[in-house]
Length: 214
Image 1 (cartoon, rainbow, N blue to C red):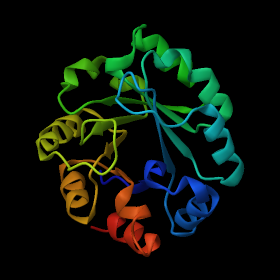
Image 2: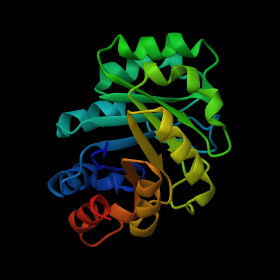
Image 3: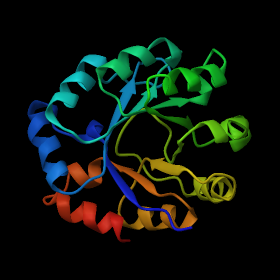
Image 4: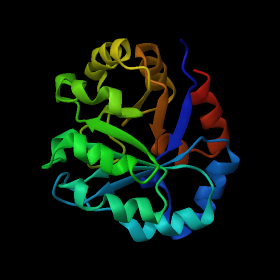
């Protein structure tokens, strides 16, 4: 079954001095959701936004907010991000210190969708027993922490292997552009997170359209 291709601009690459205008620009450009990278300086070597910013973004758009928690012990912050307006919360299997089944159920208890993510070198075996309980799997195509990194082609076999076992959304994040989007889709991904490629373009709507149709 062919999956619908969805485009999720990463706000990590947006101009935060003009955040509302940036959001409206990609919204008008036809994106499907907004990807919000949350980093704590511990799980990854960078610090970004918290629930307060998610709440502010929620006030300026009706687009789904795809909140990606790249933080240690994400189970401690699920309530705050759900209440701030997240439509989906994705947690890293590597970062959960509690029972992953319980964390997934905690997210679902807020009546929102749940994703689980893996770093490039983490094997699928880490999450296979959880696939029936999540809506999306995010496979990082760079080592998480900073935008603008080079796409890691070695993740493609993992996407293909996952698609054989999982009928939900497969999201890829890191180094996505016209060329790498084509490779990711061919491997089985259907949700493309792109930051620099979209927000750095003169015409984001054109890039969104191209990514959807590569």
